[in-house]
Length: 185
Image (cartoon, helix red, strand yellow):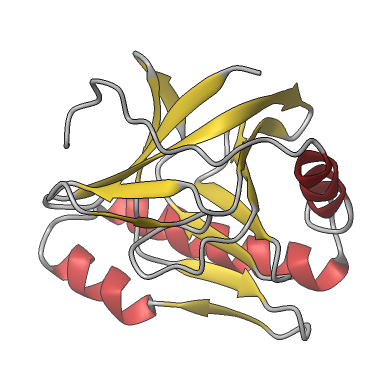
């Protein structure tokens, strides 16, 4: 199975890099799988377990989705948490899938709670000129739309993503720990 790199960029600087098995593409977008105990590398060169994005994660199995044209990147985590980074549209750039974080983080917890975190971070980034008016408006629309989709069980957030996760875990693929010659940022 092909392995790809995924990079989340922060503004004005910073990024995180992790690897994933490419599961394929469908009507919803491109699907990736990062097994438990895979590594995440920050732009400072530090490593930690992941399969959720970012330092300090529990290192759980995670299927991710880059939509064909949406302003987001989704994570279906083995714990039952659905987390989305509202972002620029994810795109393949060279050997990496990359997107720029626009701060908002819609979620649906395993207990069914739905919300969006970091409205204050979006406001701060916009005030600092790091997020344009167009991007801010698109991010706000995306977060509200995602919350509605979560609440209504719209696919791929109903069963599709969770079925992809179960199928990926059943493959028994090893954790991803090699970053090859990928640059820090």
